[in-house]
Length: 160
Image: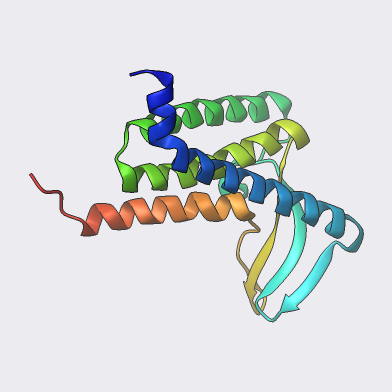
């Protein structure tokens, strides 16, 4: 298979990936610029914007202050991104879209890990005093990709 054919077959998915990445970058830069001075913005009884720099993986798990472990986790994430990229190009259209969601979000977050040494999370969902983990746009796309893959696996029967 030549490069032009691969590019032609995947142009929509590359466009989706780049859209997710740049939407994530734009929202994070905007959140950092606004929330560094205000720290917390009340939206309604269930949503605040609150800037948190997350050094862990999804939802703050495995947060480390030590550089060795942080760098090790970052390298592992890069390896997972390469594997997901491989699966993305080998998948069929629907699965390819779901992998593209995951890949776009993962690339956005790993970019921040390398650039800021942490991932800026700023969406704070809560009910009363119970707050969900802070997250960002990249996390939304990663989660949607995983949920759609699981739902598809349980609901769609392949024709043989």
